[in-house]
Length: 266
Length: 266
DNA sequence: TTGTTTTGTGTGGATTTGAACGTTCCCTTG
DNA sequence: CAAGGGAACGTTCAAATCCACACAAAACAA
Image (cartoon, rainbow over all chains, first blue to last red; front, top):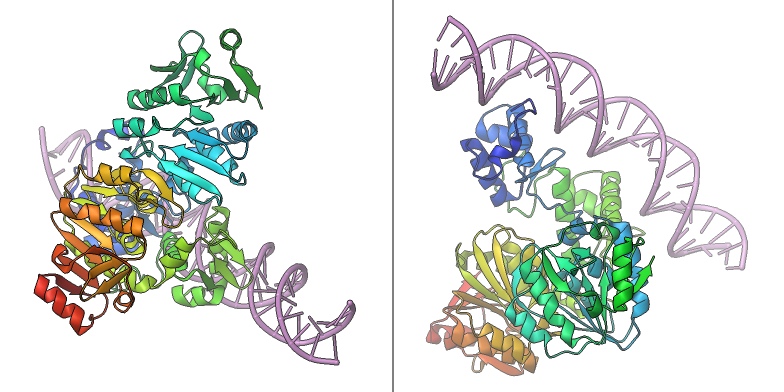
């Protein structure tokens, strides 16, 4: 396994063949972290052998190497939501700060799950007298830290990837609200099919929000313009505001103009 | 490296760096603030090393440096929530670790909002194949960080003091589940009236959980034994297990024994 | 036997740690 | 209000520790 011409992917899916690797993982899950020397003594092998094992497990994403030892993945320095925030972080943050201008004190806001909307929730920290409805646990945690903001959460089964509820309970719960502004993040934008997403459940939830909203804003960075979408969420005519960080392609700009969607650049 | 007969939380000297950061954060959540010298002595490293750790954590936004020590971020506006979390923190943590013994892999758990149940959610981090239902945003955030645990959240209007949903939507949502174990924290215990709480809404939510549960456990520290309650939540006969940190007064012990409530001391 | 995989050892490089030293900040005293 | 003492802070540098790579020995299978 030294040379890199063989894909290390072979052991990532199923359980490791080596008995020592499984025992090591068990030990880690029991203890949370171990030092290299400790493990070497425990298995009665050299420290270098342990390091090789740890390297394999790290490539498979099962553990995390640290100086002096090994621990379970999910570092202390990065709470889970921060990891996903890193992608296109500057662009998303700028977009979120621009979107704050769409919000007035006293408004009722619906924020769907998504990293860009999470940035928006953060940027709204100083706005008082706000009512926020969301299906995202991350956004809920954020809003709870903001004094003077009321929070309503759509519950149900929580998707472990998105940390949000997309089920029928969440859809039914949101139907009772008539938010002044509904803010959505989106997986892709297509000049013909409008706003698209990759996950069917997520898309169905977002679609259900459209009829209730007085105004709909979509936040997306420029990387979404040349991505192939999967499930349709909204047409251009459904969206009043599109906040993005780069001038969209001509076809998209034309479709937005024809449908009356205002484009806000940052 | 010493033997590991100590509890996992009090790490032996010379643990890997990441372990120190984790433990430092845990300590800070219990105490609210610590001095540099105190931490250096606690971890048996130089003060300079602690300062370097603190710098890292500060850059990650997890702590805040102050002259002479370190404290949790958030500043002057301390929500009552964090105060309760620190109150009797060691006792609650010990109680939570004892309560882990009531949980088996594969179980479905209902955890109500409360600082002791939040400690339990933390202590359950390494238990695989668990289904958790909760109305607490804090517990939800905690469980989302645990791989292999499914999460269902009861939503609705979120109480800004408790960070949890107590409304009729939450009650209705929880009615569909039949958890193997329902864990409640409680505001007070009375030999005659049983288990009591201070908030009517919270009490109504907890009461609604009792008929669904196969087994009910109450976690409460000893300070709850001589507090005057306000709203009744459950009788002794409704509760199968009471986990606490000190021998309860004779009247309470007698009432528990008469009703068949098992008392677990830590 | 031969070839492959795993393990142990040695070396150079990288990271972390602790002590020393100059600076900054807080608080008391005049 | 200013000055000064002292504690805390950040920086620098040497020592210790840890890590990755290379290569040889050992275990194993064909």
